[in-house]
Image (tube, each protein chain N blue to C red):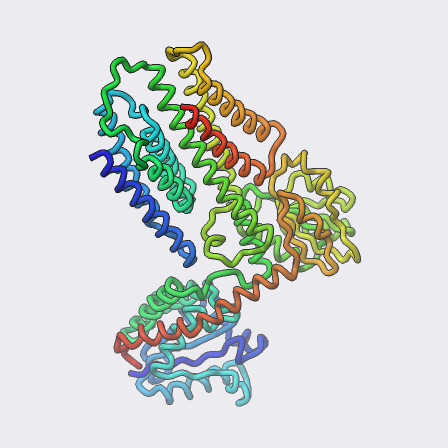
Length: 336
Length: 255
């Protein structure tokens, strides 16, 4: 019995190809049954996320099964022979190493991300429930989950935030702890501020106020985020109560000056205030950072922190791969 | 035997502090800090029990005993507050202070070599000594939380976010909440201590030690009043807690 993997991901295929092979979560079990019914195959698991679709098989002849699977997939999707250039093929131990890399987040678009672990687990559970796993794939996946956990606990592959939004949210948590008591104001209804505010809401921020020169746009974004729209002339009044301000207006000069914050300090009882300035040119004058209870971060600082985290994760890859090799060498996995 | 307990407690505090600092430097959390501090507390209790039995009263009769009682109080409040607020790093910061206090108590002459039984222990005197030293333990720990906040505040303001210490420090808000609660607890205990002090029998109408204690109490009460009524920046609150604890040690100089 031989192990094989056929797949395509964000590096090998554009989204218009990936979406044709995507399998929705409820269909994962049926897709695994379909896969295992392939001539010569005995076991099958299908993994499908927004960045990858992978087919894991146990078959008597790996090369033969690969050809069969590839032709079935391209026929099903009415793709020409060129489509096969998007696929990667792994057999025996290569397939086992690849799955461990996927589970550990080493093959992800955002290196070290943790969501993939749950997604692979979900795909395996679906195949298990559909009865399409046996001694080869059961041992492989269980081993891969163990290796994935070891990689994440023994290395810093998942440490630090690698996006501006997540860096901002981590900083907010470092200042305020749980965000459930924190209120957020967005100045300027741009895409970046929306993403950052959404990250704060997803971590429990209590309420969101949106202020924009166009009140209609503010109302629209406020509705989308379950917050309140504030007229642009009124943002200073709201500054008295909020804990986090995300600013990304298109103003050609600084919008928030030291005097604006000084005015509300007493009313705020000198509580900490976190400014996230993601506008270029900057919306918040750098002098604001001189106020004792103010923490001011601009786009360059946040980008710099995200880049540092990405670089730190890159440095961990070799260490992670050593763990994967060592762990797989300990066992004689069937099919490899 | 009492000195052995004190010596072991001091060594354990030193090891706990160094262990914690090395862990923080490596960027990992020292889960053993709490265990070390529990061991420190047990040894301190051993010391205080023996001294209490010899004195047949509260073991607060010489400067050495007061310093150990203060270190015990600091350790006790850390163990009550630290794990509850997930601020285990407080132990790493408290351990050096415990080490210094106990180290000072071990200096020759600080502890009476042969403690004698107190002939007529007075209830108010014992209450004054015990609650006051307990209060200083809470206020000392507030000072430690204040130092932790000042470190974190500096790192956040200056964008120095790479160190292991930054990753391990609890959120600024949690530190300020703990600091404020410790100030309330310490000031409350100090209130009882000062009242008991005025009720205990005295040789002079107004004892200078009590006047200093009263000034310390007024300082802390004023700080809390300002924080509650007007508000105070985290940095000012933390700096005040640290400065006032250092100044309040004058009380011990007046004993």
